[in-house]
Image (cartoon, rainbow, N blue to C red; front, side, top):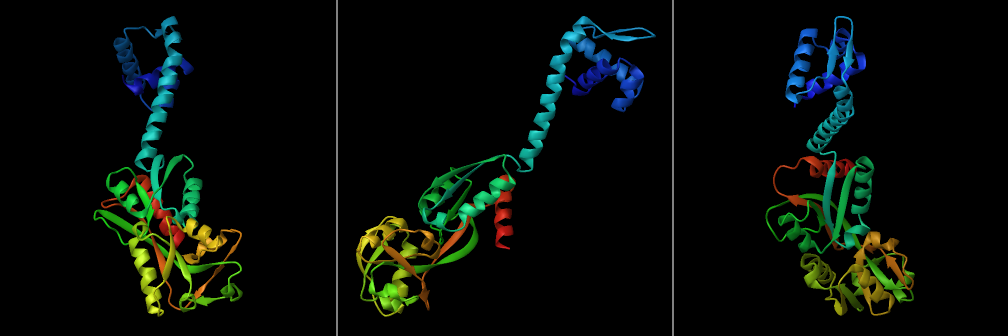
Length: 293
């Protein structure tokens, strides 16, 4: 069914004047007449009673008019939605993130994106870094915050600033009296660390920095997350290393101290599948670039 013909039907029903309706529609009167005659043939209905002096809606036309108006509104809304989808202004994004990443950039980026695009739904999934990679490759996620280096090919990274590690100590520890520590100051301490299988590259980086500082860390306890590291330190089971933003975590029984000199850092990146990125993925990446700038 020709939407232009339906629109012509509505406009003529409002003006009841061919000349006025043709002007509003920016068509000639013969073109308007042709549209309406074709519509009446298609519907097998007489929509208007015409005479030289007047145009009047038939009872059938009057009954049909509300439905035609609804149809035109829905068509306009459908066109608007299609344009928004094509422009990447609506829909949903599935975003993966690691537990520790939510102490860093992702919450601010997600909040900023939601404010800029309130009509876009965001689905968030907490995963380990290698699980984020696999979910992206399976197309279960659109974007993911993770920690390079990558294990799998086929992904593109948008690198973010790495977060330096700081020391977390029991509050009554002798070293807590210092404002700043060096890694070598922890040489005689028991360590609490996240298990290597959780993040092998980061684990190895920490061990390498300790060795460069002249010692091999004596690992007393292993944990599954940095939050657990802080909890175990608060229990007096050793000292730990966590990223700097975690100092905002006000847990009783611990204190945080920055590290002077060479120290490990946790890399961050926003990952997606390789290839062109448009729509919502491209918009999220553009926001990340803007915020970094």
